[in-house]
Image (cartoon, chains in turn yellow, cyan):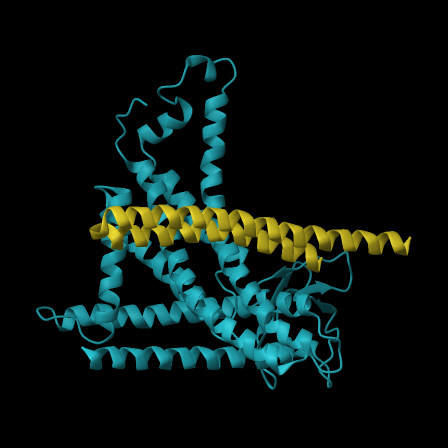
Length: 80
Length: 345
C-alpha cells in the first residue's frame, strides 16, 4: 500500500520534470523562431530595427508566459 | 562621449549592486521562513512566499500582524489581530473558536460558516499601491497646473512619456476614434498593474498581481467594459455572424455558441496570463535562491545570487511588458466592441 503511494508520488514528480523539459523545448522553439525572423527582418530593413525589436520582445513575452504555464503546473504537481 | 559612457556605466553598476543587495536580502528572507532545526522544504518555502497570509513577514523579528475581520451570521462582525493565532513560542494556536491553517481561518465547529473580510498581506499591498498611485498622480496632475506653459518638471517628466506612450501607442491605435472615453481607465489599469508588479519584486513584498483574485477583478472590469460598450455590430457579430453559411447558424446555432464562448475566453486568457507570468517569475526566483539552502554551500550561493540578479532584471522587464500586454489586449477587445463594422469576411 505504502509502496504504491510512494511509487505514485515518484511518477508524479517524474511527470512534472518531463513536463518542464517539454515546456522548455516548446518555448525554446518559439522564441528561436521569433529571434530568427526578427534578425532577418532587421537585416533586410535596418531602419526598422527599433520597431522590430519592440514587437519581438512583446511576442517573446507572450511565449514566455506559455512556458511559465508549464512552470506553474509542474510546481503544483511537484508540491502537491 | 566617453565621459557619458562612463557615467552611464557607473549608473548601471550602481543599479546592479542595488539589485544584488536586494537578492541577498531575499536570501535572509528565505532562510527565515525555512526555519531552524526543521528540514528545509523548498516547495513549502515557495508556496509560503507566493500565497496570501494574515501577517506580513518582512524578515525574522519584523512581522506585522494584520487585522482579521470576520463575519458570521451568529456572531456578527468580529475584529481582532492575527497575532492572537501565535503563542509564546511562535507556534500556531487556536483563538476564540477559530483555527489558522495554511493562511486560512476556519471555524473549529464545522457547522459554522464565516466570511473573511480580513486585511491580509495582499489587501494591505493593494491599499499601499492605491495610496502610492494617488500620491504620484496627484503630484503629476498638480505639476501640469503649476507649470502650464513650461516643460514638465521632476516626477512629472518621468511619467509624461509613459502616459503619452500608453495613450498614443496602446489605447489610440487599438480602440480607434472613440479612444478618449477609455483613456483614463486604461492609464489606471496600466499603472496599477505596473506598480503592483514592481512592488511585488521588492523583498518581503506581497505577490499582489500574481493573485487570482486581483487578476479576476481586473479581467472582470475589462469584460464589463467590453459588453456594456458593445454596439450593434458587436452583438450582431456574435448572434448573426456575417459571412458564415446559414447552416452553421439555423438548425443548430454552432457559430453563436462559439462566439458566446469567445466572450468569456477573452477575459479568462487575460486573467490567467497576468497571474501566471508574475507567479511563475516569483517561483523561478525563489527556486534559484532555494538551491543554496538545498546544497548548504556558499559556492552555490554566489552562483545563484548572480543568476538571480540577472533574472531580477528580466523580471523588471516582464513586469512592464505584462502591464503593457494586459492594457493592450483590454483596449483591443474594447476596440472590437465599439468599432463600426462594415466587413464582409
